[in-house]
Image (tube, rainbow, N blue to C red; front, side, top):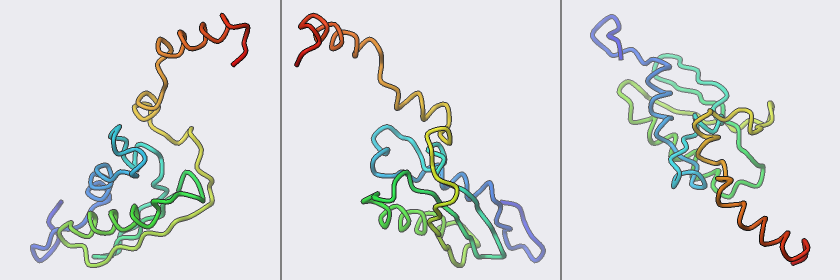
Length: 129
């Protein structure tokens, strides 16, 4: 954080993004894919000590939405100089896998070498289950 006039640390967007990079949707936490890498963060606005975060969800049925927004409020709220955090879930634009970072895609990609034996076993049975 940089120092603003009067010795008070000025809150920067980069500081907020860095904290968000440590916030995980419970579905992706095990693979260490943050809300930033998932492409869920649409916008971050800072006005003095107030932080507004516009966030997408991968699905309207996300069972962890409340928990995720609370985690974000707590973590971003812990930054020096933050007085309030508002997390707004938005539906426009719609989330799609193209929003994910390359590292997130790599972590979610199924390794072909694990799938090939399953495919071969199925083909070997004439494609029947």
